[in-house]
Image 1 (cartoon, rainbow, N blue to C red):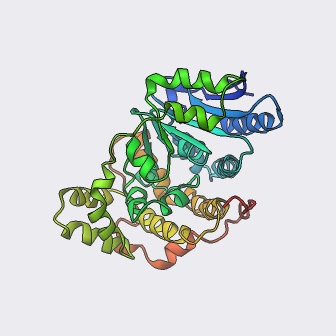
Image 2: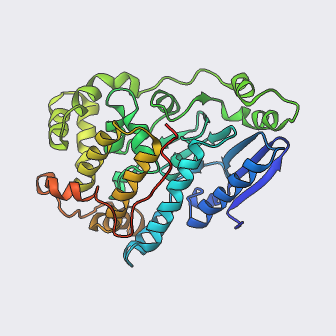
Length: 351
């Protein structure tokens, strides 16, 4: 084990703590492998009845993958990033079918790869501090880590809105959209974790139910009318046109946000979300995401998007192509072709 994932037995539970707080616990390849090794070990340990995932520090569970490392590696050909994604997606799929209760505490910032190691678990907890998002289109990427499946199964067109705009979810939003199961005030987490660890305690579901409270209202729920109407369109161009024409201030703001995103990645994201609606399992969605992500790593817009947001921080990405009209259907379809190094192949029995 490395020093960025803390693993220990705590009574009846196996504890996994992402311990990179200065980087908001963003995931490195080594961390992914360490979490996988811990889960494999806990699965075989009869004294462990559940696994609990938390993040070190006060700011969040995990802000995603180490995108600066993606930037540097993509400039060198992207082999390291593709290897990271293979192991990350395999970990996401394992979490979805883990044989013991997998309790993910999504306290604070939980984005990108942080969603991948939490939102596929069997017990997903948010607090009043939770900020949940798949922000990939901000940096020239597409929603991954099984995010396309989660978004495609959200009510109405909420997932389309979240995937394209990269908007953040409040705790109430996360519950509404199927990214979380329970709301627990952050002040009660220490007591909850202690009760879960008690070898003589009640089953995990009963323990969590004792601490769960009604979540704050979902702002997205109040916006369903214009979101469903606008994002039901079959093209990004038509979605933008509907947003602009709706007369709703929030819709106009969404249109302005889409104008800042990579035109290519917006079209690829919409296609990925529509395709994911017909997928029969998380594994199928992850296999599609691997194809798309490998293509994105080789695309100009990934390096440029991370440069603008994280490296130079000028917030002025120069996308190529620069307009939606310049991105044709053949360019989008190419993202869904098998990568040169082969497909990601997973067991498709998770449902």
